[in-house]
Picture (cartoon, rainbow, N blue to C red):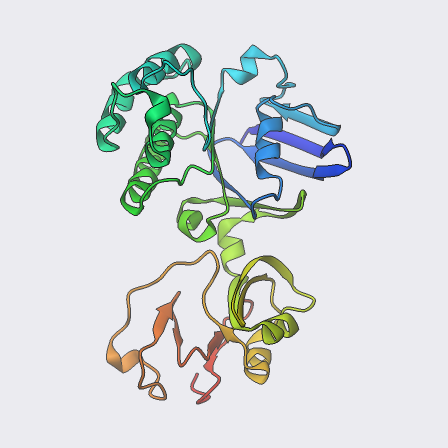
Length: 326
């Protein structure tokens, strides 16, 4: 499999701020990548480096085997659609689609027309009058119809739930028929997890994870509880995200120890879900833990008994911390 992007010790500084801190990675042809991280982690800066909108402070960056800066051969093979994409003030939606054909050699006008109907784009309206969601839809249509060998979406999810679901379906269907390298940058990890084959996670400009999504799913989970409990349990573990709600804190954790299930019982920490997992249909009543008469949840084939079902994601041991049922 050929390499599309190769970065070695790539660094970008803005004065005293190090936005990208000596990272190394590669992107292969024909894969869907996720560039994940909190807002301000350096995702957009990295994408601007890939698309020659910024010069690197240090390190090397090759795209299609060449330097991307002022290189028409490279840039003609890249489609970069960002959330705050700007267009000339007089342009209408139809003008954007018409001009895209001159920028992208593999542009599929028929497919763009189909997508425009799917996303209900107002072709005669001026782009500057569009809502955030409709503007995101325009970028998605251009990105998918460009059929560019390297297609990049930067925070493309300013859509409602129905439109986001449609985007995921159309992306997977078209990727199956026309394989190419797709890079999706977002902080909404759960929504895009089922699309991804490889995951890169940035934190304060550092690349902390570069791994296949399936391998990551087997070791990543979320813990929930009081702030002090979560802080105690996650001490020494790699955290890739988190949120705090009043006195409760939720932290996404990566690489638990081989006995994490037992430790979770002892420390009264509840393992809730795989951070890159999905919700499975609930099983029959006979499959439920008899200890739990109250409503409960079922995620990734692991039942949660009063939020006490735990699973070691290294050895697959599963048991209930309240009733010891395995």
